[in-house]
Length: 79
Image 1: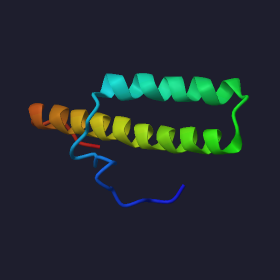
Image 2: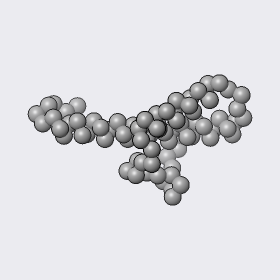
Image 3: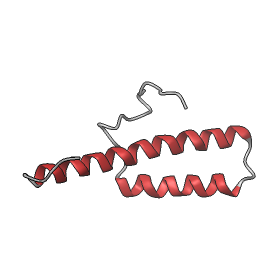
Image 4: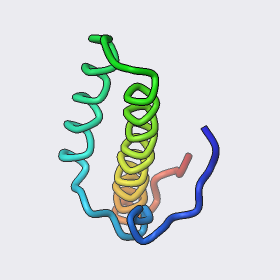
């Protein structure tokens, strides 16, 4: 998977359009569809790309939550 520059159609992680829960649920559905098979190569690639995008979005939300927790617990060692 190559890194692509965000376009007007692709929101950046700084401006997510989905909540963590929405992105996680959609990612789970993408995985279910890929595992079920029966897709064309193009359909599979499109789903894979969407899955990668959703995984990045989920990671963004998790990173932000980790930062907020670290900021809220002064004195705790940071990893």
